[in-house]
Image (tube, rainbow, N blue to C red):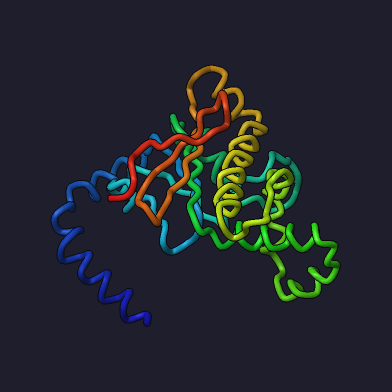
Length: 221
């Protein structure tokens, strides 16, 4: 399977790199200066550069399970997402941060299952998930956002409701970072919560005043 990557890189060199060598040389000389940061899921079906048709150097991307952002916490622990946020805001001075979630997210689905089991008082959840060292603790970041969801139809519309509420939770957590809060207040930074409906090819975004999502780009293509 690794040969697929090598063949792909060879094709990249022959076609994309050769045609855009000036762009890459500019990126080498001047470094990166993207104005948009995207926090998105590690899911192989969601590639922000492909979704938005952008070139190398256009996006500063943070990827993790379920596109989650933890609340600000200054301590001696490891904080990969927070470190990337700090670099993007303080060093690159991005003007926009987009939290990009998506339909059929496996990380949110796993969290929904655990919440449903807990609601049913199934105390063996820990035993079932005992072979996961990190994922359960990580997706719990979004757990507070799921408390009011009715999961009777899960994995129906409640799955997508959970995905969107997790996005809003991450947007809220973004604003706990003091330097992000300051940048927003001074109108140097805007934050957005977007949800990609991969089934219909639609992009939805939240209206901050109402926390509701509206269709930004029509789907059903």
